[in-house]
Length: 123
Length: 123
DNA sequence: AAATTAAAACTACGAGTGTAGTCGTTTAGC
DNA sequence: GCTAAACGACTACACTCGTAGTTTTAATTT
Image (cartoon, rainbow over all chains, first blue to last red; front, top):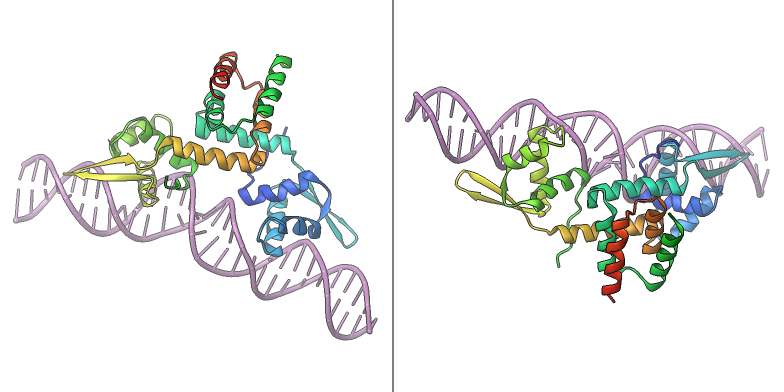
């Protein structure tokens, strides 16, 4: 497993679009992101090329069409980010994290059901 | 509740020392951090002054002694960071986060017990 | 009081980020 | 084939971050 590149806040938003569907041409990505972000198209192009340089995505040129596609999985990036976050904020242990989210009532009933089920099944 | 300032990775490490005990003079903070980090004392001073500028801590000058003390609570910062992380990585919903950590077997048995208890008690 | 010293403040600097303008090349219509 | 339009590549710029050197200030020692 290659270590995932560092992906910044803005870059995540771009990657999410690609993880949702790929390959995609720049134009579609720009259109999709414009729904949520106030970004100039060139800004998105820049992010795409930085992600390319970081080897987070690959560019396939087909005729006059450039297609963008992730090179790293969402799963792997989520894993890496989670690790960093957990270490930084909760000193690396999960319990305080859970306690935190539980206290903040960010847990819905269905979340709990799902979790319990997972716990029963898994080890 | 004042919104917490953005605190970077390195700054977190400094704040942790202050949250653990405060007020403290720079010298003690430097000594404490030197156990874990390979930082030049000036680096820590810089971090302290940036945190001061961000209003994350206050400096009390008593005679020739400068004492550093948090202005923002750990709880509030943890909350802010968690929010950002959750939005960025898990699109704002807790369930995928829990599923993630559950799958990665980062949950110990005692974590589960604690969590269940919390859930039973809280609403 | 002058010299020494220790700590805080200021300065620095390269890499990364958010944001976008300009250049150059390829494609497509006239 | 020539000109315009599209799009990727390159350039830019201010700001942040990690990291630390230099200057100033203030206290302590002689």
